[in-house]
Image (cartoon, rainbow, N blue to C red):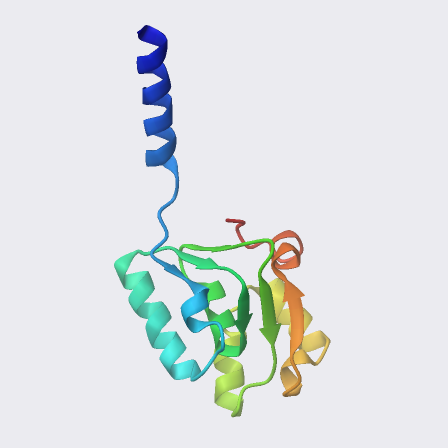
Length: 132
């Protein structure tokens, strides 16, 4: 009986310790207005919700990398490109950690409409975003 109670306690502790995710990037994966995404990210941060970047996350969706409680799945695909306006491009660039921002600028990725894909595993290992 004591082992059973211990097993239940351990299992319950693991469930309570597991992070709860308020949102996943799948709802925003196709990108869109950088102004709208900035507002969505601000609402998420104000609520203290977690954002999990999973699957396909292109364009303005990558702005969720600046969510306060973000994590990236290693299997995610993040697609970067220039915005429709200089302000949109700046909004996206301002959403990234300095190392990622420098990489995108140095490689002129944010100067073209062509998508450049960076796997989630690279976003985690090279640019030091938290892994889910």
